[in-house]
Each structure stands twice: as C-alpha cells, then as structure tokens.
Image 1 (cartoon, each protein chain N blue to C red):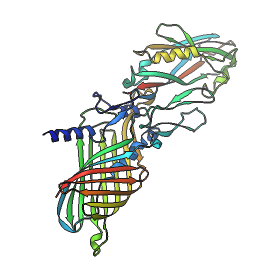
Image 2 (tube, each protein chain N blue to C red):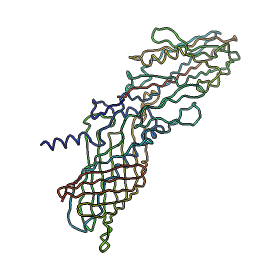
Image 3 (cartoon, one colour):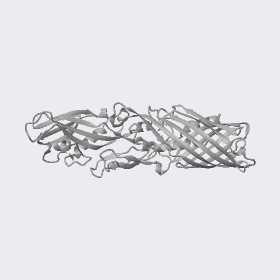
Image 4 (cartoon, each protein chain N blue to C red):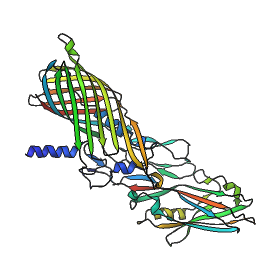
Length: 184
Length: 293
C-alpha cells in the first residue's frame, strides 16, 4: 500500500513534464492598445480638445490589477487638413480629477509650420518638433500601476498663427504604452 | 528569486498561455523555440535499450522511461525583433526565452525610449518528460513499442497539465539475418504525439539504427537516429489591447535532426534498469525501469 502511494505521488508530481522552478514575480510585457486622440480644432486660432480614456479598456482582463511598471515606447503627432500657417501646442494628461500635466510640447519653443506635421512625427524617430515632458509622462505611467485602473484625460491646447482657420483641421496624438504585468 | 513550485493554486489559464497571448505569431517562435526543441528530443528518446530481438517467441515488458533535456545557456535567450521605429531598423535584441531570466530592456540609442521583452517563466537546468511504455514481441524478429499517458487538469503549473501522450513504433532485428553476429543490430521507426491542453500539440518521429552487445547481465548499446518534430501552438493573440482576440496558429520545428545514443542496460532478473545519453542539437538523457517476461 505504501509503495503504491509513493508511486502514485511520484507520478502525480512528475505528471508529464515534471516539476519546475517557476520564476516568481515574472512579468509579461503587454503592449497596450494605443491611446489615440483626434482633435478637431475649429475655426479659431486658439484650440483645445479633450478625450477621456478608460485605461481599463486598454488592458486585457487577465492583466488588470497586475501591472507593476509601465513605459512609453513611442509618442506620435500628426495633423490632418491643409493650412498655410504654423502651430504651437501641447498635449497633456489628467488622471481622474487631478492636476493637468504636460506630456509633450510641439514644438519645444516657438511655432513650426503646420505642414511639418502632415508627415507623422514621433519621439522614436527623434523628431525635432517634439519635446517630451517627463512630469506628464511620469503621471501617465503612475496611472498605469494604479488599482483599479483610473480614467484619464488626454488633452491638447495650442495656437495657430494665421487666420482664417479652415474648419477641417485636426491634430492627432498617439501614445504607445507598454506595461509589465505580473503573471504568477 | 524564484521558488520551486510543484503545485500552484488553480487558475483558468497557465502562465505559459497568459504570456504567449501577448506574442503575435511571428514573435512567439523565438520565445518558445526551446520548448519545441525539448519536447521533440524527449519524445524521440527512450524507445530502445538494447538491440537483441528474438526471432520469434512472446515477450512483454512494461517500462517507465524518464527523459530529460539539458537546458543550456543558449536556450535561455533569443534574438527578438525590434518593434517598428526602433533603431537599427529591422534589428533585434537578445532577451529571455521561456527558460530565461528577466526580459531585456532595450534602450533606443537615438531617442532613449525603451522596450522590454517578457521575462522567462521557468528556472531549471533540465526539461523532463515521463513516459510509460510497453514492448511486445516478437514475430520474425520484430517487436512493437507502445507508449501512452493521460493526465487530467489536476493542478495548475506554468504549463497546462491536462495532457495526452500517445506513441508507438516498430523495431526489427537485422542481426537475425547473420550467422553468429558479433553484436545485435536493429532498426526502428517511431511516431508519437503529445497534447498539452488546447495550446500545445507536438508530433515527433524518428528512425533509428542501433547495435548492442550483452556481457552477462549488462548490455551496452549505441545508436543513431534521424528525427523530426513539430510543435503546434494554438492560442488567442491578445496583444496591443485587442478587444477581440485573434487565433494564432504557429508551427515550430524542433532543432534535433540527428542523434547519437550510447547507454547500458542491467538485467536484474526481476526487473531491468537502463540509462543512455543522447547527443545532437539537444543533449538529453533517458533512463528507466522495466518489468516483463
């Protein structure tokens, strides 16, 4: 009887591919669905826009509450519509009802021709027209590790140099996030 | 630091499934390639422990074969493709496989942005497989080998435990055609399949040539084998926050093609024990115990 129990325990323990030492705290790198804000500017030379994003909706259910760390692996800006003037703007984040913090300025200082953004500009390609703002990026990444995942607002605010402004201009901001989700 | 975990709390999905769901069908190959290599090598091992096959007469043996592939440093990292936009364009970075440690954080030299590979799941130096097996013979110097094992979803580990192993093959004595051969010679062909949950399905086949000589209770044997194996992965790809998972169906070829085997078997009358070493792209060992008549 004792022998049978021992053999059964051995078989159970080894089953098919044996025992393993699992890496505790191992994380899977999860590329979140990109946050895309497409803002219609209106006809004024000053503009602002806001989208609300449920961070919860960007992450598969299996990884919610398990995000330990995050990173921005790209941030892109492009525009839609023809306009002869120049633009100066920022994109910012607000977590729940917290403080608004800039995540990127485009350009860093002064203005840049609107047409320059008709070709998508990205941080990854080291666009000279984009200046990341660490404070806002940190705020965004901190939101990723908050439980439960909060709603955030991604907003843009800026000015155009030349009136009149056509009514079909858009600024599109894309944020690419990667999160480390614990799987144990 | 990791801990050795035989049993973990039940979950709906294994850690392996949760991890590979973030890899698309192009990216997953490197991460799990060693798994395919080890499954293939293990499944093609342990089919024979001697080369002597009686020309005729009934014999039957039940065996428990343990096989273990050696996990080397080369199995712990792979070259993962960099995402679009990172430099160098079309380049790669070394990061952890399923058997590796922490995933590598790649820092783009131009922008300073970072991208990280997933961590490895398992810390181990060997990858084992346990195989119950039966041998029945012989007619005209021919015997058949059959292996089967089915395990339920008893507990959750890093892989799905619900599995079915099924295999079989045939061995034929060549030395029976020679008068007074110095050694026993046999050839064989074997096929086996292994399913782990709905996620992994491995097929392996091998043809072997073996020679052995018995000295009293001890038989020394050597062999060569040519083999193939494929691991099919079926999983829901959920990368980039996809709200609608997409079925990924990936086929991965096992690395082992040729193997050289050397081993010994000791006949202790009531039972036999055997062990052999196998050399090829994957180095592995087989051993076990057999009872029969």
